Image (tube, rainbow, N blue to C red; front, side, top):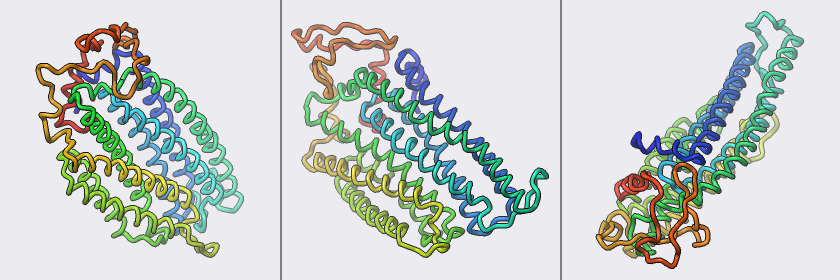
Length: 406
């Protein structure tokens, strides 16, 4: 857990505050609108005596809404984490998450919900509990039109808000990248191999965070598998949750300990996971007779989640392979403290490792003002001057025992 002083430092910087404000405002608005959509959905299906399949479809829709709300909260967590640790890799992850999860989820969810609205009770019986609707076909159609009219504007509002917030967030992310300047990595060895290894580990940890969300998102969508008559069993659903948690935990542990054998085991598990998701994707798209397709109402969402999960797994395995290569060649970051702890004569570099010198003519203080940097022609002793009081605190938080700060 971050220290209160570290959390409070976010609000001393104008761009930090605006960025967190944008993400928080988006989360509140989207969750608020989603809540009204869910409320109206429950009122509509509450007038139906649903079959087992109908209950499964309705349950799937509620799971999608829940995942959408959770994605907003997860985005806020990613934002706070990136701002506290000034992590450029996690800032990029935040944008990727906003583009893939929020944007695409919104579009797919709208399509899915339109299908469910048109289906209504499905093959269930119309038995209204609200006195406003007669217990006949006219009452059923009137209820569908009424609740569709209440939910559709909310869904369109969500679709409109998502890209608007994403564009604004992208602009401030671009500004924050220059402020972050990979500050976490200044505290480590002057050896560029160590710095490159730390960047690779940082990318790996941020990708594992995305893997965590999407793997469990996929598992959550399998919960109503029995009601919808999917191919999956309850045992398989539980195994996806359990093995996913074990695999991701083992991956983080292998990075912290820089254990090459654990990394090899994680890579093997990742390859097997790709095989499993490939098999599931093929089963989802197997042609089935009309009226006997259990994925009719859920295929788009399951396909999106599965494809994104597979893409993230491929990316994670590639980055993990680079980390394993570094460990195998004894380029260690955490387990060999002599390589990254500053000695008395250690001098910080004048330029961040991810930016050119011309990008760094000005430093940005916590108050949002720009401060002139010393000339590049001066010695390394004055090449970089920290511009705020939290700089040293950030270095302490980014030590070898705190890989989650990466």
